Structures are given as structure tokens and as C-alpha cells.
Image 1 (cartoon, rainbow, N blue to C red):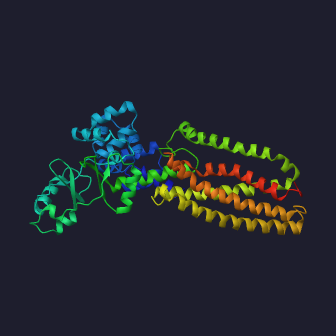
Image 2: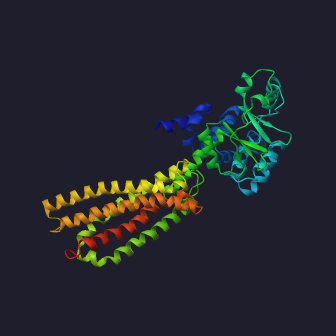
Image 3: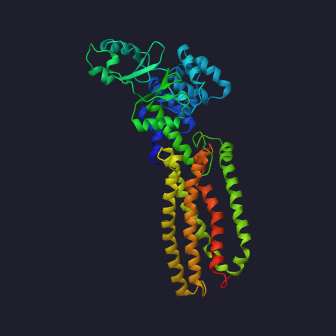
Length: 447
């Protein structure tokens, strides 16, 4: 029996330990999760519940009696309650909102007005505020009272004017080290990082990475403070965005839910659409081969090297598109750097293509000389393969690097330039390059 299964079995004993259940949770089936959660002491069950994903929380809530469901919903912070409400079927959302306390229901209603992937949809409406004219002692005392309201974080206190405009921020560390008689406005920072309500979550995550902050305030167009995005929310965003990009790079739509919980039909649809598109693209390969059928008939030996040519171009294109998409996701590359990217990939394509071409040339010449497997014109064939490899690898690197940027320019997701899509594009063009080179070099001999 595996360690994972032993841990899973231990998690559903009569008196399971919270840490055992937490460790075994990914390996448990839905029924086992429900059973394990029901066997935990109430406090432990609640502690585990609030750490689950919104999808898992919904699964657990739908198994509870109304009274306990109401109690567990009220454990959630407003931003987490929003995720649960959005995860629920539409017909169950009103009942879930009604189960919340009045304050949380009002806050959740405000957050639901924002898109899930916007800063407004991520933010917590609970944050610490102080006035600039308070003394340090007064501010600390005031923050202590606010902390009883389950603030998202009290690492920073935000200084507002009478119109709720954000005018400064002060950390607890600065408050504790300041002179008692000093005023908040004397120690606050007026230059701060803020985000707009409609900023995309990926841009927000970049700001956290760049500035190493624990929380960033969200403001409207008039600089009124609406909420804060905390670093723990951004950790989830990093994982979500990385998951989406990896799934798209694999040639499928983003699943939007865990692999083992998504139903079969949505999974087939998300994968099948891309497969059909790629299949139609690959059919152009047959068209290209038909166009060069006379060359193939005259020199069958050329067909031996087709997989070599198209796979090399596809591999180089897949490398380039993966590197560029990831660099764009990290904010290292933007539209303004397209020319620098192109220059780098031209250089990389020529060097990498030359390396593969040299290897291919040497292999064909040596093997053709020793075995006569490629006929009397094996040196010319080696030249065709070598030149084709340089050209195809160069084209692959350019296509793989430029396609994400072109999609970005068109307002589309760069991750849609998946590795299989680039490989399909390079397969078709690679054959055209290969047989064109053969027609030029072998004319008057094999052709």
C-alpha cells in the first residue's frame, strides 16, 4: 500500500487528526472528504474548511444541513465568500447571500459588481484606516479597536481625508518606532503603489512581485480607497494564471477547475476544439506534399528526411514560443521590445539551425559514403538537408517568438500561441522550404 493511500486511510479513522486530513486531502475522494470532515472536531473542521479552494468549499457546503451551512459561510471573509457565491449554481446564489450576516452581505454585493479577474474582484473591503492629524498613540489605540473587526491585514494603515481619498500609508513598524507625540501625517508615506478597480489580476500580481508588498490599495478614478489586495490573494492568482498558461501552451483551453473534478463533456470540448483546429492545419501538410509529388516520385530518398526537417522546425518554434510567452507573463517582454526579440531569435535560429545542419550534413555524408544508402548524389542531398535545417529552424524561432506578440497586439491571449499550434504552422512551411531547396540544388541530377 502506498504512503498516500495509508495517509488517506488514516484521515478517515474515527478520530482523525487535522494535519493527517490536510495532508491526505488531495488523495481523498469526495465521499471520503465529506466523511473525514464530519469526523473532525468542529473547530478543526472549520479551520480546514476556510483553507480549501472555493470549488472544494462549495462541494462541502452542498452536503451540509442549512443551519451548519449558514454557520460555515459566515466563517469566510468577504472576498472568499464572493468566490464561493460565484462558484455556486445560479439558482443557489441568493440563498447563500441570504445566509451571510448583514455587513458581509453588503460587502459581497459590492464585490460581485466587479469581474473575477479584476483588482476590484480580488480586494478585501476590510482595511485599517487612520486620520493624518492623530498622534501616534491615538493611531495605535484606534488601530487596536479596528483589529477586532477581522481586518484583512494590519501591516499597513491607510490615511484618508474627509472625502475618503487616499493621501498616505503608514506601516505598523513606522508607528511603533515613531515619537509618541508625533502626528501620523509626519510619518506616513505619500508616494505609494495603488491599483485601479478594473486592473487585470495579472498586472496586479506583477506589482506585488516588483515591489515586494504585503498589500496594495485599490482606488477608484477619484483616488477614493475601495479596498486592498493582499499577498495571500495574489498567491492564488499566480497559481491560477500559471495553470491557465500551461494548459493553453499544451494545446487546450483553460479548464477553469481541477482536472479530476471537471466533467467529461466539458473536458472533451476544451480539448477537442483545439485538436480539430490543429488537425485541419496539419491537413495542409498533405496539400504541400501533393504539390511536390513529382519531386518525391523522382527522388524517393528525399522523403526519408521529412520527419527530421519538420520536427526540428517544430521543436525550435515550441522553444521560442514558450520562452516568449513566459517572459511576457513576467513582464520582461512587451510590444515595445518586439525588435529586440526578433533580433535575438534571428541570431538564435541561425546558430541553432547551423548546428543541426552541420550534424545532419556530416551524418548523411558519412553514412552515404560507407553504405551508399543515399545513392551517388548523397553529398548534394546532405547540402539540401543542411540548408533546409538552417532555414526551417530560423523560421520556427521567428514564428514562435513573433506569434505571441502579434496576438497581444490583436488583443488576444498570447498563450493561445500554443506549442502545438506553432509546430503545425512550421510543419507546413518546413516542407515547402525543404522541397524548394531540393528543387534548386538537385535540378539536373535527381530532379
